Length: 199
Image 1 (tube, rainbow, N blue to C red):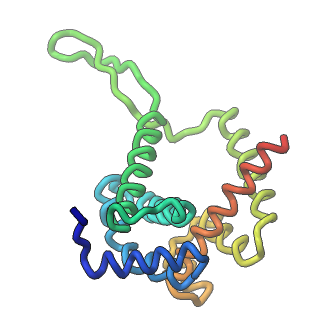
Image 2: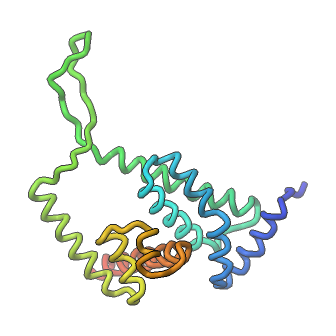
Image 3: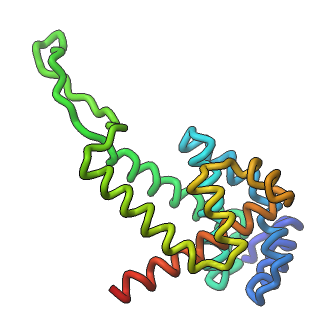
C-alpha cells in the first residue's frame, strides 16, 4: 500500500532532489519552510533562546550535509524533525553531565545528607588556561575560512552578537545570515577534523 503524502511533502521531495544536485535555492527554500517550526520545537526542549538558535542551525547543517541519504519513505519534515530532536537530546545529555556534585551541610527530615547538582560557572586557573588555549586554537582555525565566513564566525562566537545584530551589522537578510553561519560551522568542523588527523 502506497503512503499518501500532502502536496507540501511532494513539493519538498522535488526541492530535496534539487538540493542533492547542489541547488542553493532549494536549500534556502527548505530552510525557509521549516526554520521557525524546528526552532520552536527545539526551544521547548532546551528552554534557552541562544541554545535553540544554535541547535536549529546545527540541525539544518546535519540534515543538509546528509541530504543524499534522505529517502522518501517518510516526509522530509519528519526526517528533519527526527534529526533536530536527536541532536537536541544529545545536547541536553551533555549539558546535564556538565555539573559538579556538592555534599550540602543540610539534612533532610530523615537525617540524610542532601546531594544537589549545581553547575559551577567559575573556572579554576587550569580551566582558565585551557579556555584561553581553546580560544587561540579556534582563532587560528577561523583564519583558514573564506573571509566572509571568518567575519560571521567572529561576530557570532567571539563577539557573541545575536543573529539579528549580525544581520543588521552586515545589512543582510536574517535567513541569509543563518544559512551562511551553518555553512561556516560545517567548514569549521571539517577544518578541525583535518587538523586532528594531521596531529
